[in-house]
Amino acid sequence: MNFAMLKNAPFSLNDSQIEWVKTTIEKMSDEEKIGQIFCPISGDTEPEKIKAFVDEFHPGGVLYRPMPAKVIQNCHRSFQENSDIPMLLAANLESGGVGIASDGTYYSRPMGVAATGDSKNAYRLGYISGKEAKAVGCNWSFAPICDLDKNYLNPIMNVRTFGDNVNAVIECVKEQLKGLSDNEVAAAAKHFPGDGVDFRDQHLVASVNSLSVEEYDESYGKIWQEVVNTGILSVMVGHILQPAYSKYFNPELKDEEILPATLSKEILQGLLRGKLGFNGVIVTDATPMLGFTASMKRSESLPACIMAGCDMILFNKDIREDYQYIRDALSDGRLTKERLDEAVLRILGMKAAMNLPEKKADGIIVPGDEALSDVGCNQHKEWTKQCADEAVTLVKDTQKLLPISPDKYRKIRLYLIEDRVGGGFKDGDSEINRFKELLEKEGFEVSVYDYSKPDFYEMFESGVGYAKEKFDLAIYVACIDTASNQAVRRIDWLHLMAADAPWFVEEIPTMFISLANPYHLVDAPMVKTFINAYTPTKEVCEAVIEKIMGRSDFKGQNPIDPFCNIWGSRF
Image (cartoon, rainbow, N blue to C red):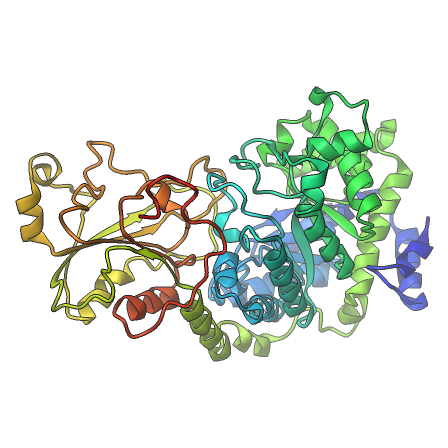
């Protein structure tokens, strides 16, 4: 085994650290090595179940969805106490500590951070995420997101990205990485080779980054080179095809032979390891996603992704079945012993670089209860409020509606547009329902459109006079949040005659506020006052009210083109 490579970036191990890796790997059975290359998802909270899981599977890492901080901390402690080799404990820390602790800080979606135009907020995103993760024993962040939001129809990216400007994304990503690093949380930047070009979600289909080699080099390639140069320890690879670079490294490749990056030697070894010079750990995106499962038989795809260059497999379908697929491939040669050893070598090298063996030996790999005071602390709340104030963006007000007051518009009709079909997972709960209370505190009379019991007369027979009698101002507040496994993230007006749509926009002043997806002008270009707020938190809702009442200036800058080059959307 090439232990000398661990002296090189990003590991940069000293002799004693390399000796730990060498001693550890030489003692490991094939079964334990197989365990190291898996990072399953867990929901177990009982210590005896966690112990049984570790004893059977010997996982290299594990990920939990958010739970209360104290519960998560105890789970992480049980994993570390029962594992001979310290574990990578992961979370999707995209928007704050809420990515691992349900009572953590929901700081801001990345696009909200970018809208502030101030990289200090990107650092704070990483710092808050890292500090609260560290408090509960989480040491591995599946963030930052390094993608470009190049397609407004993409249902999975938009507010999860820092926008569509290459230099802004680079600056924000690097600052987020610093914030995480300052709290000793390693990062797995994602989603290599780059999402956001396609209009589809890789949870549902292998998506395509269709840029030419030259276009890629000037955009995603530039971002990823900067990320690699920071010394990042791991990169998450998506189930995303990059045909131009696949053929660049293998001109004989036929179109039908091009594979998603997680299975592509051309992309993993040619582009990421070769051209970009990345020597760290490569982890797949979740392997139950259709972008992976529909590309190859699972019995073939799991060993194939390791042979292609991935070091770690994220999540399972049937975990025992998945482990057996790797055992079988190791037995019949489809997965070589050398390649398995190389993957384990890098994983252990990453753990050594994170000082996990020393922390485990000193009993500080998961902190005590006292650290929980960092979760949702006052400092983090104050920073969250400041970021919200700087992020909210006035996209247009061509009717000169703002500021509003009860003297001008006593009666407000409030339309709260949310997901009517659940699915996927989000960073935190929406606070959209706060708007009624906040507006009433300002002295407005607020009626909320009742989607559960729509009035037949109002839907089909009422006219302009009826509407003017009911309200002086219409305010639409939308929270169509980015979520996995949903093909479309657009406004879904009531199917019976679109009765909740702003048909009265030329008769009654109308405002639209988006707390998530920034592209709703595609479906409501006729609304002449439009605000993007990016993150559906209490702090953002309060900031919006301050601004529409005229007590605070709009400070946000568009990180993307909210007009989507759609005719009429700017008017």
